[in-house]
Length: 237
Image 1 (cartoon, rainbow, N blue to C red):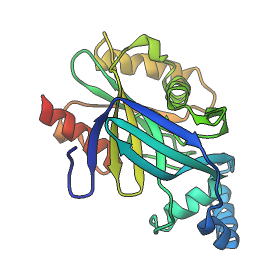
Image 2 (cartoon, rainbow, N blue to C red; image 1 turned 135 degrees about the horizontal axis):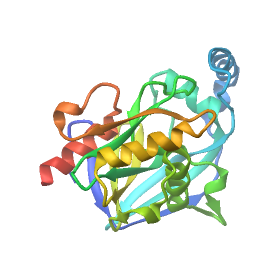
Image 3 (cartoon, one colour; image 1 turned 90 degrees about the vertical axis):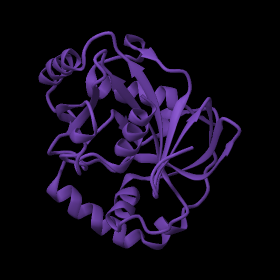
Image 4 (cartoon, rainbow, N blue to C red; image 1 turned 45 degrees about the vertical axis):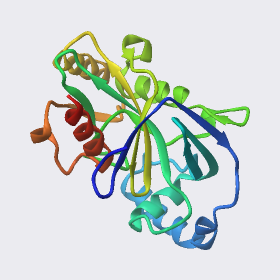
């Protein structure tokens, strides 16, 4: 395990994630404020949708396995919690992300479109897990990462050589399971393919693709988990 003062980066062999719904007292206590807050967000960005999402309420690392339990809430509650600078609320924002690496060593990050909640931010293809990721009582991050990868880039996981296991990045309120995907094409060629795919979409989630080759390419548009993951990878090379 490694990382900065507020980041831990750990290689893990597998995930054991279950849907174990419990009440989320923070959302219940702030219901009126949440509804008002989301109404303001939606007025500014009508494309926002208050769907049902999953948040991590308990986790542990046992050996080389990450085990976690998820509750269900609405997207508005998550956005309010984020908007209040992530006060202690007995949950973590936990999701899977696809880190695509070109044959030349460049990593792809997607720049979120102006109509999205995280407009302008640049990070790996990812998304908050939802009910579509539940299979029985399991939360399937393999399915989640495949869906987000296809929606945002047009790629399939099978288009790449996937590293075994996951890289778990913990940065404060975020717990991110990163699946590393190695491409046979250069990062620039991959970027052109994604841009062509975005051009065919009516309302693409991404506005652009940025390529990251080294620390000089990192900036404030990239969330802490992207910085922590990439810095740790570069240390290992």
